[in-house]
Image 1 (cartoon, rainbow over the protein chains, first blue to last red):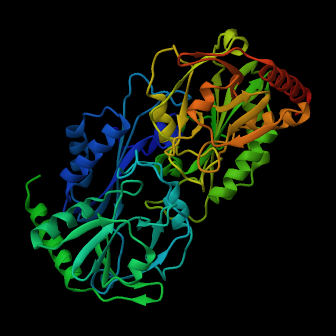
Image 2: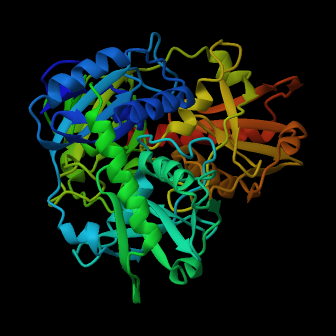
Image 3: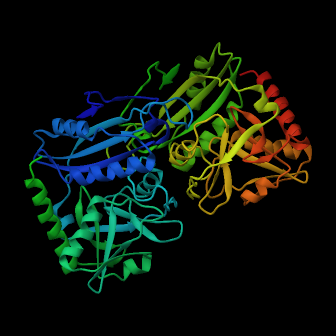
Length: 277
Length: 277
């Protein structure tokens, strides 16, 4: 199911700058019982992305209405929003006026084994390095060749996710998730000032840690620190929180900190679901 | 005029990975009297890009036929080729099988004043910095947010192009062109090992220099070296070669080296036009 600028039509103009240059942004959102989870936070990040890319988009009310129309009667699904600078001519110069393209689409919720959430998943390292781009770091834009090349490195189901390092050999994130490690009851997560995506659940883990009185620090993370961690976990808006049970040959057990954060996220999501939308 | 996978249809599926992630490549080609100039070189670069992005595309003969159909009876135009990984599902993992999308489209040739070619153009610096990505450097992929943000920095016709520095403060290229400087009868151009696009005309300038016995060296170029250059010029497949007459407040005159290279390129293009296609 899909709506492009409000119309049930899976086709876009080839002149759309999303297609021509990856000139846009996206959001991936869990839908539970017709409710797009943490929609306000996703809209906030989308607005920040628009500001960064200088895409003048003010139709968040319209977008929300379209999302409601699409997610009505959905029990459990994944909602993807794409927002581009709209159609334009050849060349990098922006069209005048800019009329952004908004795409809302629904996908079945992935059939993840419950064990991923309770016991944890298996993690590898990717050899594809993330480029450095402080200007675009943090936002969820459509220039995703690094992630595509990294995700193409393994096909088997033996690993659920791959960690990416940047060209300075710092561990940054998974291909589709953010990473946290626990060492001596403190949380650490990579700095995302030069590359990486600042996930919504990552942001909530900071809030959780503060409320739970757990220290959390953004650092330049090394492979060695990952191997030596007491606990590791991954976050994104679809998986929420997956503990890591294995990083290559190293084994881990979901520990107290991981389980506390996971429970906090569940409770916080339950609150979000109670809100009248 | 446009052909998408051979069909006269300006619409693509929203699930095309070009739209979802900028997952593809492009080429921009001058068409003179139905002849796509240096098509073989553009195909070579496209093949190199496919190898880098691991897009399995073998239909170059079909693509060439479609280009011939589209450019027939075109006196002077710009041809743009876009090649993407084709449609896929949500997520970075590649679809199986990959069925690339090929788009060939024609645009009117820009109405550039002759003076740009003879006297030169006015050049500025952009404040948007190019990110560093050695894995993607050189190829003409669809992840072009850096260029878009840079090109959005000026609207007036006072400047025809803007130079971009990388995050290490090296001068790399124009938003849509490669840069050469002349100092003491030697040619210098930025190294493109960390970012930038290796243009077809840039490649031919190396060939020209070799045939003309002019030294050409790839260097880490600074702003200061640009200001102190004897001559500057820009290249791409649409403008071919534009001398720079002004960089901010600094003035330049097209010199002997610039004019020799420009003439060599004209002669080489004339030869290409004589080839039976």
